[in-house]
Each structure stands twice: as C-alpha cells, then as structure tokens.
Image 1 (cartoon, rainbow, N blue to C red):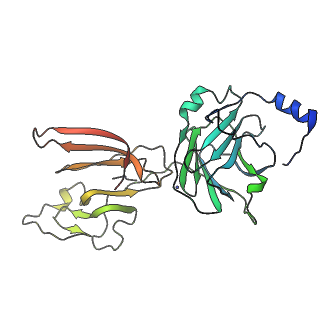
Image 2 (image 1 turned 135 degrees about the horizontal axis):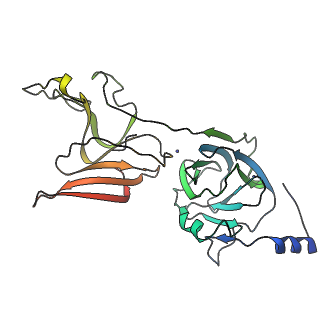
Amino acid sequence: MHPISKTLLTLTGLLLSLTLAAEPPVTSNVPPAAPSAAAIDTGWIQRLTMVHSESLGDFTMRWNDTGTVVRLSDASGVTNLVCTLKRRRSVWKGSPTAVFDAAFGDGALVTAMHRNTNSVATVALRRSRQRCVLYVDGQPALAVPDVWPGPLTLSIHAADLPEAAEEGFEQRLGPFTFNDDFLIDKESPQALKYWETVSGDWGLHAVTGTTVGIQRRELKRFPKPERSPNFYSLNGHGANAAILAGESFYNHYTYQASVQHNAGTNGLLFLVTDAGMGLAFTVHTDPASGYLTLALWNRTPVG
C-alpha cells in the first residue's frame, strides 16, 4: 500500500583549437570507447530556466532512441552537465571536475526506459531536495545531485527543436499533505477516488463488519462505531494485491499507516516509479515458529 510523473557558432582553424584547449577538464560516466556526450557543442537553444529549487518543469524535443541530448547549466554557463538520454543507459558529461567529481558520480542514478516510438517527446525535470531527475514521457531516465545553487537552464541542440514547439513550463512545488481516513459514505460511488488499484480486490471495510466494493458480510455482534478510532478502513485481498496513491515524482516524504497483519505477507509500498518498481516494508508470519519477520525490499515489482 502506498498512501499517498537548447546559439549557433562555427569556429575553424586556430580559433577552434584554442577554444578546445581552454575548456576545463570534464568528468563523465561515458565509457572510454563510447562517443562523448559533449562531442557536438554547437547549436544550443535554451528551452527552459527553472528558478525554484523545488519545482517541476517540462518541454518538448525531438526524440531518438539512440540518444537525445539535454544540457543543464547555471546562468553563467560555467557549470555544465550534458546528458545523453537513451532508452537503455543514459550517459552524462560534466564540467568542471571540481563540481562533477567522484561524489557526484556516486550520487547519479541511471534508469532504463521502455521503448518510446514517439518522434517528439516531453522531457521533464523534477528538482527537489538537492536532486534533479530527468523524465522522458513520464519515464525516469537519469537522476543526479543538484549542484546548481541558483537558476537552472535546460538547453537542447537546435536540430532537436520540434516545429511549432511551445515554451517550456515550470511549476513550483510546495509542501503537501496527503491523508485518507476513509470517513465517507459507504455507498459513495467514489469511495477510493484517490487510489489506483494495481492488482487484487480492494474496498472499504466497516467496523460493523460490512465491506464496501468487493463483498458484504454482516457480523452477529456489532461494535459501537463511536468507540472505534476509524469506522472504515482499507481492505484488500488476492495474490500480490497492491493499491497506490499519489504521484510517481513524489521522491521525498514521510508517511505512516496503521496496518492489521493477518495471514501471508502484508506491508507498505513507497517510492514507486511509473515502471512499476518500488520499495516495500513488509511483515510475514513464519508458519513453523509463529515469529514475525520484518523485511525491507529494494526495487521490488509492484502487483
């Protein structure tokens, strides 16, 4: 359960040689035999400037599975990170090395994406809690530490600008609180309107013994609802039953839930991605000893 998605300049001869020699050293996650993500450093067009440290921005650009390039830079253009977004393994190249050092590399996370057949894609950047995550059509591709203390500019190659492209958009993200105590009319047609069922059967269970949404069962003795801290609760069953709330770009939060553990394995899902992977904290009763086993799962499939 998860309580709670780019100037064109041509240089030749000696001038080109001097420019390249003056460039600061760079670091990257590009293998030595692979082409550099910054091999073509001409023809950048600015697509978006994000001025807030907690924000979500997006813009459109031409997409190619073999690699589409996005540059992240500060206002002065000194601190540059060139990202080549690929379906299987995105790569990055940063300058100067004083910023993009070994610690930066350790904090970068590359995520493989599903095949994208769109010729134009929406690239989004989630900037939050000293971390930047790049998405391609809702799929996370590359996450890196946020090393830009001020506004962050995103640019693409001029050739990657779609026809009739609209301006990029930034939305500031403030703190939010999600809470659901399920205290709604049991006959409501939108009893779980804030929830997305991934697998299994889910409904609202009443303290009087009725379950809304999947079945109805009456108890012989009825507890007093006014003495129950929660008249309704979330009830689910089925193999690998899972239900989610919130958005996949929520990447820093604290939450709590009261869970009744019965047979099998029960637990809480969190940091679930659009690809259906997440983390989980579960409890399982050992059938032989009766002891409870608590486990923390990393990158577990959901559903």
